[in-house]
Each structure stands twice: as structure tokens, then as C-alpha cells.
Image (cartoon, rainbow, N blue to C red; front, side):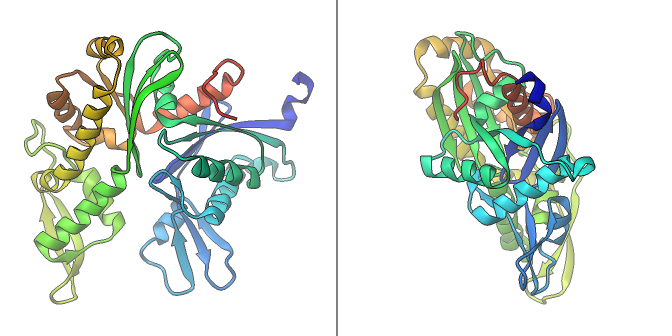
Length: 340
């Protein structure tokens, strides 16, 4: 195919609930929130990604914002197709007159059904893909952090994204045991919203909850290097007027406790069903944390104390999955775990 390589554009996509990342020519070209803004009257796309995110929660009757993915899978087929098409155009800015055929590798949750798989593939094909390959998120994360997945050595990966937490034990190019639960970044945001409403009688939006999570989010009520309290603005439910309160990391640690406990239960379940030879490997190698949730303060220490295993946070955990998807793209002929 050498002579016609220029006719095919190869891209790797981490199609996430919260963010979508695209790699082309070994570079992350697109890193945008997974959100689309539509004009309600004409149903035309007004904005995609960061621009649409700025509109969320602030729209009038003629504009609606849509998050096409929910819990790691496509919830709105049409919006997902528009989002993918718009993000692919971001790569092709300088050559808008020339549309090469696209070869895509897209990562998907390990607990995905055949119907959900079909929806991802169909969305990619409608957005312009001629060839679509799928790779499971934990496998892509393992490759992205430099693990040789083809070796007969067990490695446990925990990828905490926006919609799902993927837990998998990987060996010999396959997932041996796994757990996929729908408790992740979005549930943390929801926990914060309910806590602020219940405890402080203040209504806040998703974006404010996410800011609180970044500023003072914690998995432990006691940290060695605690972040300063953060000012939170919202609507007072008693008076209806805007109000400011301050929130500490200990409050957030208490409100996230139940959700983090569910992740811990899933990790223990995955360890329970792991073959003993691989358990011995994991005792040596430990657990690897990737995804945006890996950056929650104290989470590695909490999981380590629960499992009695060493826990390593990946370098740049947000991009581990897309980096691995990019490596899988370059090794399409060699990696047997890619699904066509």
C-alpha cells in the first residue's frame, strides 16, 4: 500500500464520557470535552468540545448541549456522529479540500455489549471511517504506560474515567479477569452536588462540582499535604439568591467515601477471580492507576491499604489510554487483541 499511504489517514481515538482525545502522527491533536451544542430550531451544530462546554448550564431556550456518551458508551447516536465528525475536521484544518479515507482505532470499555460495540463502529463509519478497529480501555492503558502486554506476566490496570472504572488483569495479549463498574468521575461530581445541597442548602451545577473535585477532591480525610479550602458559588435554596461558602478537602473525602468503596469492592472482586499464578505476579508488580480519577488525592494510598499491594499512578494518567491506542494503531498487524 506504500504508494497510496497519503490517501489513508490513520487516527487513534479515546472516545471518553468526559473527554475525547485523538492522536495523529504520534501527536495528540485533539483533546476536547465530549459535548456538542445544537441550535434547537434548525438542529445544526453550533459548537463542539471546549466551546460547547462553556455553554453548558448557561443556555437559553434555542440552544441545547448534549453529552453523547454516558457511562462509557454512546447514549445519543446522532450527537456522537456530529461530535466525531467535528473533531476529525480539527485535524484536517489545513487541507479542508482533501478528504483521505480514515483508518481508526477506538478504545471501548471492557464491559461493553455487542449492541454498544456496534453503535461505536457505526458512529465512526458515518463520520468517515473506512476501517474501524476496537481495543479495550484497560489494554490500551497498559500499552500506554509501557507494559509489554504480550508477556506471560500478570499486570493489574485500573482505569478510572468519566463514566466507568475499568479493572483488568492482563497477560499474554488478553484480559484474564476484569470488572467494569459505572462509578467514576461523573458519579464523584454527582456526589459533590448532592452533598453541597444537603449539607449547605446550596444548588451548584456540574461544572462547579468538577472544579471542587479538582481543587479539594480527596479519597482520604487526612492528607500529609492538604489543599487549601475552596470558595464555592451557588444558589441558596432558601432565599433563591447567589451565595458563597467555603468547602474543605475533608468534607469532599466524606462525601466521596461510598463511591470509592464501590471501586474498592470491584478491585477485590477482580483479584478474587484472578488465577493464582497471576496473583503471584501482581504481588510483585502491584497495581497501576490510569485515567482522570487516578489524580484524586490519596486514592493510591487508600487502594494500597485496602489491597495490601503497591499502587503506582501512571505518568500523565489522563493520556495513558490514548497513547496506548496510538501504539495499537501503529501495530495493527501485530496485536491480536484488536477487534475489527
